[in-house]
Length: 255
Ligand SMILES: Nc1ncnc2c1ncn2[C@@H]1O[C@H](COP(=O)(O)OP(=O)(O)O)[C@@H](O)[C@H]1O
Ligand SMILES: [Mg+2]
Figure 1: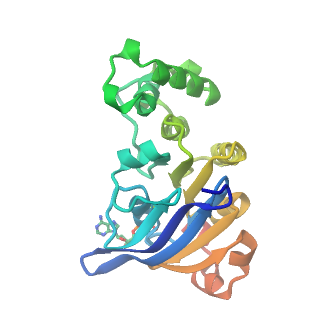
Figure 2: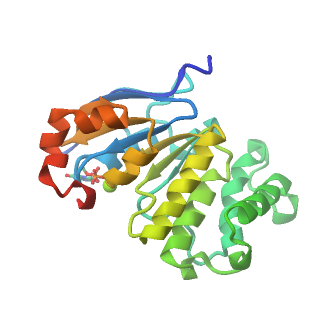
């Protein structure tokens, strides 16, 4: 495995919901330490693709390779153990547990598999990791509060921290700034940038075009389940098919 080999390879991925081909023969590669984004209007199939890559859904056709290994159809927990972690568009926090407990539970993935589940006092690695994340994400003043009582922006920040608790090599994010204020969005964008600088690979699923164009190394455009275009942000922006299908509406940034 070379540093220049893609960390993630998606090949001919499809899934059908009844008559609807929600993801239709989608292929792309994500490079190590890069921010790769999937954009497209609402209903394009972004979250479905995300669920196929993160193991929540099983594809009807196609392959997902992570670090060169075929992981198609593996459950989310198995993928977390391989280094692929995700934060959902829909919240995946335990609202009635404290901020600290949410982090510590997620960090249990670091403990040797044979010992799970560990009593609190023996989960040394998980406790250490939770402490680190509390600090890094500036959640110290909220550590004892129930996750469900945090503000929307704080919850989204905690979700990213939870997804990072297992020290993944790649982080999958589905619309991490959804419903956030402009300044919270800018903060999350900066956080994603810093994570990538630390050599984390990021797959970002997002409909906020401005955010994607600003952050991404590589952009994949989905439209009606299929890949419409892919390339650098500049390539994608200049692509006539993308302009017609997406930017052409003049509403893309708010879709
Ligand atoms: N579990 C499901 N069952 C049936 N249809 C679904 C399901 N999830 C999504 N869809 C449909 O698949 C299409 C793609 O949805 P989605 O992946 O959520 O799009 P996006 O995230 O790009 O907005 C939409 O038409 C949506 O209604
Ligand atoms: Mg979605």
